[in-house]
Image (tube, rainbow, N blue to C red; front, top):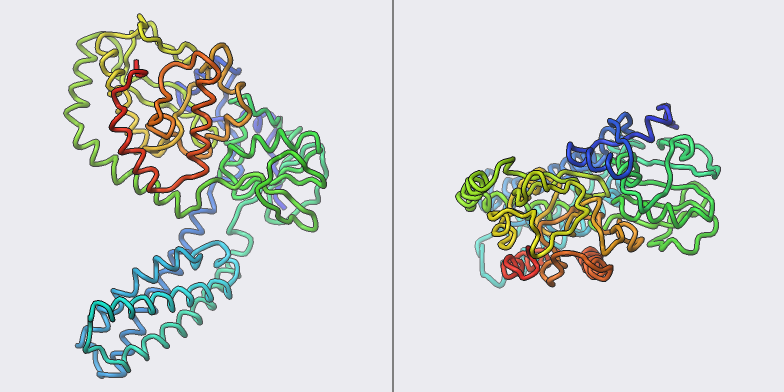
Length: 484
């Protein structure tokens, strides 16, 4: 059983943000001090990815080795390269199916039997697909039936056996190290558990304040790297803790005997007691990898193509007014953590609004001549491509908002308790709300409500194809009547 021995003040002050985010948070919500606590300095996710890669290498070696063995049985040597072509054909089919059926997943790591069964299922499916494709394409008519039969049976047997052996080694070597669990107790007793970190919310200075972005940032830093967070609390505090967990992009659970209003998404067990799962993050590891791959595949060539535009904009801003070319502002991002967003400066330096409390109006006198043009054409957003490169943003996602943003006279955080839920995905340069025309100032509460509803709809129905469609539709609204 691990326990936190860091002084309470250090836990409460565990916040690390960039320069603009630090200044903005200090101005709005109090003093921000350097991070002094990392409960999980090393994420277990990378360990799991490494083990998935190990299993994949074992599987692929079995495929190539067994097809080579089949060729040796039939021909006595490997000069006939049909075995190599067959291996190259079946491998991508197998990997794709294995990724889909969970052959490389946490249950497969935890159970050698489960891992072996799913890998064998993927093999049989990929062999069947290969034979059907070969039949219809009339390919490899001179393939030796004996060689293929030996290869198929040998592959299935060797994958099942090696998966079992490798899985047992993983269990023995990494027992209790595959996931990181955090238990937070809030005026509620729970017995100590091995392989978990337990902290007391009162001692640590943690409060479930869903409308305080600094409290959300503090909580986000505390649970960073955790795979599972269990809250043991009084019944009256369940809803507040649930609101905090839902925007933190972790598997969050409330440990309570009776819970009615926390919006549970599942049920699990912790020891002999029942937990309600109230959050799990909207995307799986595979989906996050696909989204990140799309970001990089599009962002890098786009930056190369628009380099002359970037240089021209920089020169225009320099000639038009004094001050830095880039404007940095604290925004609320992934998992409710603060980050510095990059934009081309469109206002006079002395009129800058680091908190974002004053919405831009159509005839805003703070905007420079060049600034009005780049805002109208959305060119001021182009530096956010560098945010995408460094991983703090995505091409598509909920737009990041400043801490002081107002809907009418009400802070965004105070309009709807679900506001923090939009941060379970990385913020985006564009999003569903933008292509629906929800841009510009938020003079009324409804202006934010419509954007929030679009963001939550996007999160609930995410797909890689929807991201591509949103990107294409964004090209039509880059110049928009509400962009000023």
